[in-house]
Image (cartoon, rainbow, N blue to C red; front, side, top):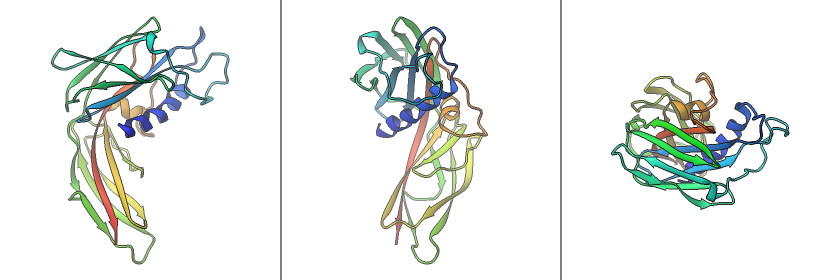
Length: 235
């Protein structure tokens, strides 16, 4: 869940700089990233920058009061999960429930009198062919960098990323390439993400086209990703 918070903080800046500034006052900005297999997912609800402000300025988040937020996550089964406030000072909310792969989810409700809705289909499981094994051992002798070839796949994914190191972006379900590692004193935990289209457009650089979001009735993005992890050990 911490990773989702970090990504949504990055997305807040992207949304403010990519969306048209509202002419009639601030609009709500709803940002959510569903992580497949993650039981607790974060949704951020803040106000856009004021129309009179310098457009593109990334100031502190301006949270929407929890009393003005009534959202629910519609599940593939037809049931719903409530979106509850967890950090009012930051405009952070949370939805608790298993997120299934290759499944359709809808965000519905209202924010400060605005009817809000969004739709997303989660990607499939993140399957890694290379590097094989949960732990990868790298030699720390000689040059200051190592190349690691990767090959992974996730149905429905249009972009891939590795945190904390960036990787190439792919417009297909399969992605292959090379990650460059500089010598570290110990271990490097790597979190790999496979984004569906809406998330890829906001979190990844070109060649995927950036767009203004998929939230009806508000600014922002409601996307999904599947994840996998590897640990690199220098020896």
